Image (cartoon, rainbow, N blue to C red):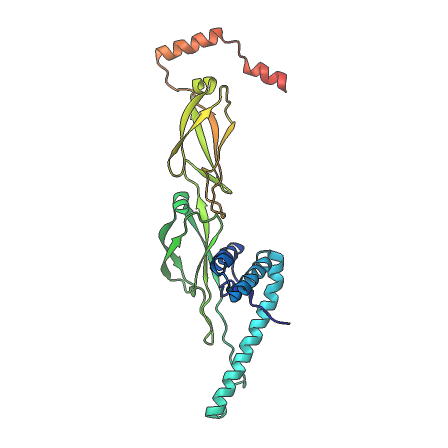
Length: 292
């Protein structure tokens, strides 16, 4: 059976990657070897087949776990094989190599990965930013890292810093540092999936008569129509004004209606409310009782 290193095919160095990282690596590789960009290139045609096959296996958690067992076993065999080859070469030129006290060759061991979590304001996540963070290392010391927050990073996504995990042993590589991103809501917007939620405050007359109002978005402002008779708690959806999606689009902006009555009314406003009280036949509590 011919072994295929699906991680290497997608340009990944380790199996310790998230599904999102696999998707990103797939898009980069597929674009590089796309048939339209490699007309007549038979090697590229074979390469794109392997890329699609690797993505099909690694993008599904169940099949990825099954493949990872094969991948890890293969790497162990390759490491042992390389060590035996090196030992033979040294013995060829230098005679018997001095081994450890128990007459065994020390296998290089990769250091453990380390994971931490940081909160990122929603504005920085939406637009992208450069950020300096200070973290405690495994020996208790503070170390400052400069990281790039990609534009539109997803809540819960991880940023990988190569070689910043625990130290390897016997010449093995250091592990990696994974920084999990937790997007922090602000006073205006709350993130839910790829949708953004915001409160839209209306006066009683705007809600009763209908109006055209301006509502803030992450990038600017947009105008929306308020239908006549809208109630507190109702929601209006503004398409494509939400948070970035992994497909390059945007979610929706959901505006929840909150009708606000003025706290301090002028004499004229109070008189109008008194007049409305006298002439209106609207009795919301009776309506609610009938509907119950």
